[in-house]
Amino acid sequence: MLLQPKLNVKVSQRQVLTPGLVQMVSVLALNKLELKEMINTEMVENPVLEELEESGVPLEERAGIEGDRERSAEEVVAETERVEKDPFDEIDFGSYFQDYLDPGFKTASNFEEYDKPSFENFLSQPSTLSDHLMWQLGSLTLSPEVQEAAELVVGNLNENGYLTASDEELVESLMQFRVPVRSVPIPFERGTKGKLGYRFDPEAEQAGSAEEEAVEIAAAADQERERLLAVVAEARGIVNHLDPVGVAARDLRECLLIQIKAQQAEAAIVLRRRQKAAGSNGAAHAMGGGANVDVFATATHIVENCLPLLQKKDMRELTRSCGRTSDEVQAAVEFIRTLDPRPGQRYNQSETRLIEPDVAFVKRDDKYVVVMNEEDMPTLRLNQGYRKMLQQKQTEKEVKEYVKERYKSAIQLLRNIEQRKNTIVRTCEVIVRRQTEFLEHGVEALKPMMIKEVAEEIGVHPSTVSRAVANKYVHTSQGVFELRFFFSEGVNGPEGGDLPLVLLKRKVKKLIEEEDERKPLTDDQLAAELQRQGIQVTRRTVAKYREDMQIPSTHQRRVR
View (cartoon, rainbow, N blue to C red):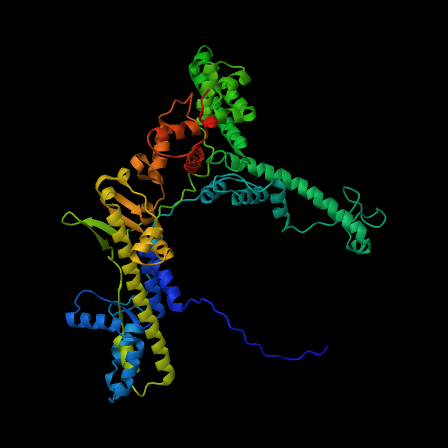
């Protein structure tokens, strides 16, 4: 069968996003800080864009700037046919080079021979768990192998301070950079008798078979692995007792046991010191006898054998399992509550996120209005020098094409920024009209509102509204809220009205906080109580929102 080339024509329809539309979508989803960073980046990449200094700008120039924003790049290029002047007479090369080629040194008098240190070098940075542990390891006197293993342990801790890698994995990591030592036994008559009767002979090594070498290498590797397992165990023990105590544990049980033993050792030291100070007659009175010893022993027994009962707060079964009185078990439970189940969290706290509201709902003359927060936002304008280059006939074609494309990109960015502002303002105006009672009375007056409803009211797609409110915050008389906070589904509330899910969760949480710990409310009881208040909700809905708020189940909340 012969293969012959053929031409086939296929017609299809596809939706393709133009670069301008992609930029418009991305600009709409940015908050104020992200938009400011994006504008600064565009000003660096596009020489046509420049920032307008608000101070000292004449009104005529500002009017010209606003006119330039509305003009398209094609209109600017069309004027090139009507320009007859000499192009080099109109270009101010001095200001051109000063504006775009100046490396940042304004005058010779301000020039300095050295670079000043950055101000960021003087700002304090929060210490992470790894930094804190490595600083402590640096103050200890350890052998090189133990130091290396301890650093490897620190490097495999998760955000809670638990060790995620097994001892075997740590040993394999240590052995990756080690060359296996090969030694071949040499008879006494062929070599010099040493302390063990053998010595290393390169000629005998070359003469040995490959199988013997493999067996010896494997045996040496096994011995090295066993030795490194002991090194890793020693390193883990050292890291376990660094500050915070309990890091590098495998699970919760091991973490709590490490902290119990550490506090027991500290209590024993204090007890000996007090006994020595009080003398032999006052030894029993130094720390109340053996009460603390009993607390540590009971706490150890609970963590080792009764941790599920402790999680269920089943005090009756705990007392029966420990063989102690209820007061002793309660004291041990209170002591366990003072321990830290996640010792790494105190140093791995999430950084505070800087929030700057994009809009504000301000009340003026008994009416709320939407005000965009444009403080510190750069005001953009088109560079006039490049416009003159387009109008000059003697400008090279490649230069004109480049400047033309830069003008198109700059004008598109200005339009997208303006479109972003209009979309956000229109969306917020609808929010203000629908949530006026919330602005007056607080969260209890919040009404359910869907993104689809707002999109239909302003005549855009729901995805546009979703991007307009994404990662943006608003300053109101009730505080600072994320714009998405105002969008919530509703359930059938009292008097036939809809109740936002935010208020439903608040009611569920309030009922659970006011319940009896010995007889906590079940999900059915919570649903029945809400139905008595006029809120039509099912048990599954209550269970779902309770889990969303990370509230334990009835069985886990009960205190026996």
